[in-house]
Length: 137
Image 1 (cartoon, rainbow, N blue to C red):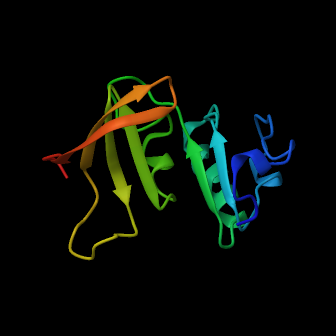
Image 2: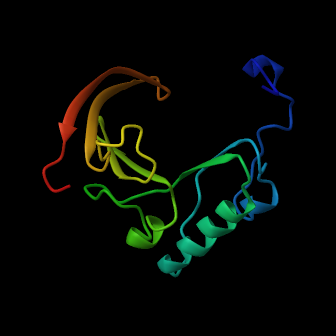
C-alpha cells in the first residue's frame, strides 16, 4: 500500500477539479470522483465514463453522479449504467445495487439487493441492515 494511513497522504493527493478527470486518473490506484457533472446531452455521460475506464489498468474509479429524487438512475439514465462494473443508488437511508457485473457468489445475482442505513455526520454509515432483493429485479 502506497499510503498505509490517511495521515501519510501527500498534500496534492486530493485535487479540486471539475472536468477532464481522465487527465489526472491514477491507472493502478483507487480514484474517487465526487462528483462527475452530467453533460448537456445526457447520452454523452457514457463517453465521459469510457474515458475514465479506458485509462484504468489495475485500478478502480468510483464516480458519484447526481440523480433526481425518487428515481434510482442518475442524470444520463441508462447511458450512465452501460459501462460501470457496479451501479449503486442511495436515497432516504436505502442503498440499492442497480447493477453488479462481478458477482461475489456465483449463484447470487446482486442486482436489486438493498440495505438500510443511517448516515451520521454526513460521513459515517451506521446500523446497516440487509433488506433483501427488490421484487422487480
